[in-house]
Image (tube, rainbow, N blue to C red; front, side, top):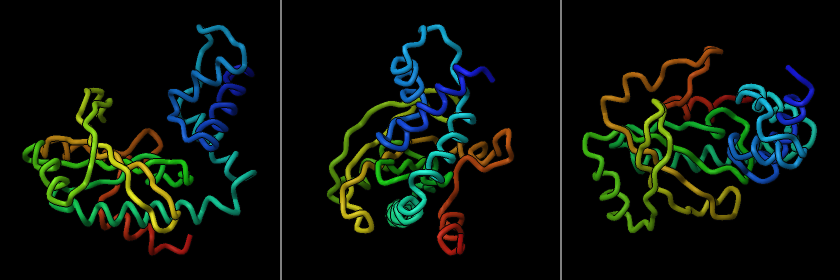
Length: 196
């Protein structure tokens, strides 16, 4: 990996941790902050994630584990509220490098896409509807809301990506490093029960 790519990854990692940016946006901001040409090759997400772990170990070792636990406990609450839609935790909270600036990302697998919205309405939840890139590269609907997280004593973002029930079949395929990209309710409960 080139020195420029490594520097972009390190700067992007700092932005991910300190500002809660997504990897893609953090890499673009890092490129600009470093004054590098727009055509400079960007590091892959695995490299940025490795730098995030390094940054957390150096600067956040005393706070990040408690923040992660609070986010996972709050994700568990939402997964229990939405159990009818086969919720799976994904993103930084699942992977373990989330901080208090990180939103919770849940994948819902629904027989009827509108049923999740109806469930939120029945729970008197206010949400916004948007669209994001899904796990297969297609755009999927996302329901975004703010939720009070007692463990952090602040509002955090919760994003519910809406998938068809058929998409559940490929949802747990491990990545190139053999890691599960998301976990269901029992998997999250096991993480929270684990001493590490």
